Amino acid sequence: MAEKEKLQVELCMGSSCFARGNSAALSDLEAYINENGLEDRVELGGHLCLGKCNTGPHMRVGGKEYSGIMDPACIIDIIAKTLEEMDAEPDLH
Image (cartoon, rainbow, N blue to C red):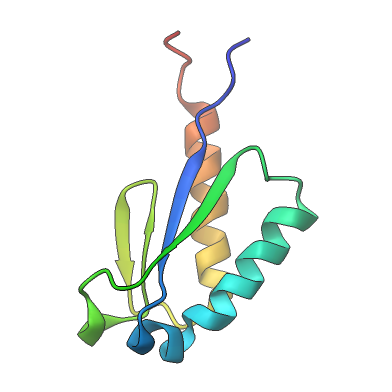
């Protein structure tokens, strides 16, 4: 069985997004990944600015962009749903 592709999760760590909630989201996401053993499935990264300051906090999950998500629980839901969708995709290798 081929190894599953890692889900890329990118948080904006620019000052506006960081102050609006991505600082808490980062901590919550790190805890979620560790508590659920997802280190091999999720790659968490940050950027200094994703250029969406007026609609932040901003993030990308699997290439899809999300803005204005203030509740870290919503971010975790997005990641869980995206992982489920990835697991449902047929392995073409």
